[in-house]
Amino acid sequence: MADLTTKYLGMTLKNPFIVSSSSLTNSVEKIQRCEEAGAGAVVLKSLFEEQIYEEKIRAADDGLAAAYHTEAAEYIHQMSMNFGPEDYLGLIRGAKKLVKIPVIASLNCIAHEWWKDYALRIQKAGADALELNISFLIHDPEDASEEIEERVLKIVRAVAADLKIPVAVKIGPYYTNTARLVKKLQLKGAAGVVLFNRFYQVDIDTDTMELKPGYLLTPREEVTLALRWIALLAGRTKLSIAGSGGVYSGEDAVKYLLAGADAVQVCSALYKNRIEHLKTMTAEMNVWMKKKGFASIDDFRGKLAQGKKSDPESWERQQYIKALVGLE
Ligand SMILES: Cc1cc2nc3c(=O)[nH]c(=O)nc-3n(C[C@H](O)[C@H](O)[C@H](O)COP(=O)(O)O)c2cc1C
Image (cartoon, rainbow, N blue to C red; front, side, top):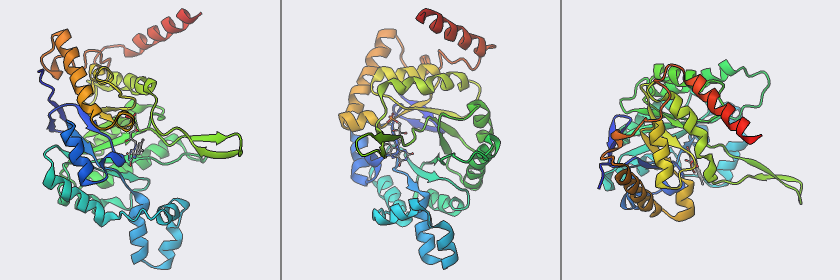
């Protein structure tokens, strides 16, 4: 059996497969199942910002309530998603008592005001690391790219400043220059980056002519979305990198590692194939490593990273031209 250990956010994982933040990790029992199925680590289901201010609103005056009474907060209230901030800390404590694998807490943030104190409570509850899923819906034509990035950085700075545990930031694929954002995330105190978050998709029902939720799970082909950025960033940033999106097999995970990721996050494949699929993917990775003669992950990680090459842009352009010319 090959050595599958890997370092992520300064922690040693027994293998690179991390169960992503989702309802696969929203109870201690489910987290135990992830460990039994062989996960290297888990990221807990996110606590949403609306859940925090739901609590604060209850304790505050009407002015605050009016200011933060958004549709999303109302939805959370109506759906009785009353898994509040205290329960979340209980989930961390419970998981830490019962599993040995690293437990990474997750916060879904859209503003920086709420999180500083709560992140310290997460640390105190025993979380090994914290992942920030920063996802605001950009729609205002007056919002400049620079300002949007500044909002992300403000959240990271507010949360990471006083924390001892490492902070990873899960970002979406739609920034103009991911490399610059990642560089700034490091300066603001992040220890890692998760590439990429998958945003809620909107679809249209042509019968009712209404909006409806799009397909929730990632299509397998999307594995290529983050590969490019991981290959460009690995070796150019000190941040740990987790590849996320479309990992359905050991081979998919190998692709992320070859590009230079330190770990991979898996979600859709586990919804589709059950949590035990982790065992299959780990076995597939082992078989591939044996076939290629690699004894450890470090033997092949980053072999296809472009970051250290002098001119990654010209390589990319070459591939692009080859692909387009080949199609004609
Ligand atoms: C049902 C479901 C629930 C999710 N909940 C969260 C969440 O609470 N926080 C978060 O950061 N990501 C959440 N995600 C996104 C996943 O963590 C993951 O980033 C995304 O699905 C891409 O990975 P995949 O291609 O392996 O599914 C959720 C995804 C699904 C399908």
